[in-house]
Image (cartoon, rainbow, N blue to C red; front, side, top):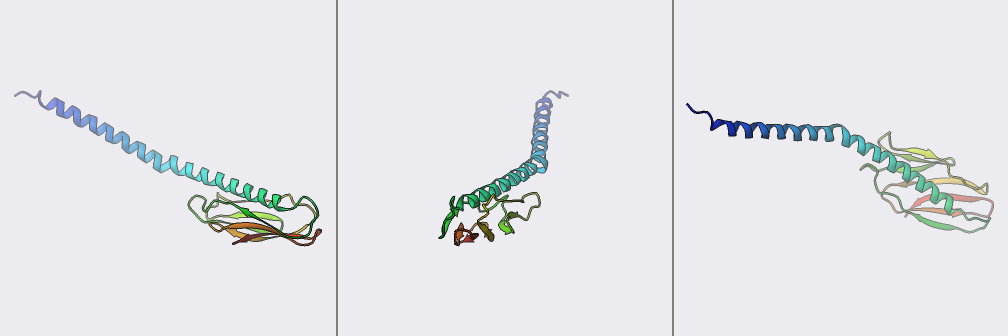
Length: 147
């Protein structure tokens, strides 16, 4: 009996098995560990940048001189972070980013002049956000608002 005709079939089946095994291990590695860790790191970084951007916009909204009146500035923020909604709220004179993922979030204190009496309000993700400055020259109120 001649078994030479079986050798090419066995070789092809072994090569195909090795390729399927390699692709399976690569997919498991990427989706099981590498990609979720990368997505979490990106979410954390985006949260930090969003909070820094919000803080910068609040600081820029306060007029440089003691002037009365009001001002309103639009603030562009991402609609989601890591695929989830979030909010930025005030806590005294501090901005706090609240997110369902505990790794995403934080707090920062804007550098505001002494003539600012209050920092109030909340921004929900996905809304059109503005920062409003109102009040007499020595008693300004900075408020986070949505339109």
